[in-house]
Amino acid sequence: MTKTITLFTVWCRRTDELVDGPNAIHMSDAVLDRWEERLHDLFHGRPFDMLDAALTHTVQKFPLDIKERKLDLEFWCPFRDMIEGMRMDIKKSRYENFQELYLYCYYVAGTVALMSVPVMGIAPESSSDAPNIYNSALSLGIGNQLTNILRDVGEDALRGRVYLPQDELAQFGLCDEDVYSRRVTDNWREFMKGQIRRARFYFNQAEEGASKLDKDSRWPVWSSLLLYRNILDAIEDNDYDNLTKRAYVGRTKKLLMLPVSYTRSLSTSFAF
Image: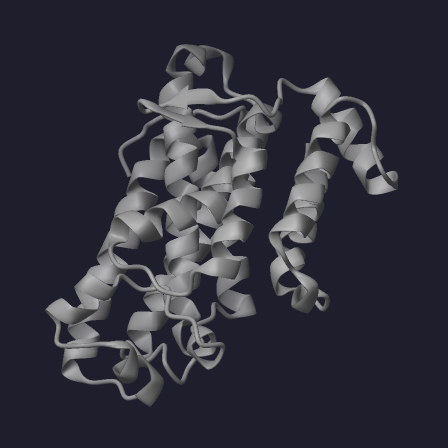
């Protein structure tokens, strides 16, 4: 399972590097169109290189496809949707409201979570809950990406990007210039409290699904969930200064989280 997830990670990283990698200066819709054609060929047994060939083998082994499926009254297609996220990233550097930001988070991170569920597997006794488990996986992806955004506010601003809801900034008397000024004010702290509270909401939504995956898959998922929650804690410990400081979880704390996440992965109770 770990090897298969690594193949997904490699494909996702290669997709992301089209926009953020060393050759990003050459990025265009035409490049993404070719990458999507290559994805189609990969799923139909016509890989372009060895990495594609390895993923072709995987998608033939597991119940994966690039067709649309229904989730929460919406249609999703995670592989193609991730490419759509790259299209969004080259055209858009501001998000007017959370609805727009949520869509971006789905494209670039929720998709990864949805790709992973068929490979990680669902516990036999939980098979009837498959739709809820996919929704929980999506919540984990959204929570992770929101946390990435909150951790990287200062770094993204240096690239001219503000991945924060513009209308919510305005509610606290803030705007892009306040982000660029890199000053942590009381208004900024109050704004950040709400953003952190929202990310934690999605992690709470993810918990039940994490406990209903196949037993061999639960530990790494719980580890990811707890690690990202601790990044939010680190932002708070930095007095909400994510403009000049990068929140991180130290090695010792990460190691101490492993037995906690392992215990969570063994639990059959969903009340945490």
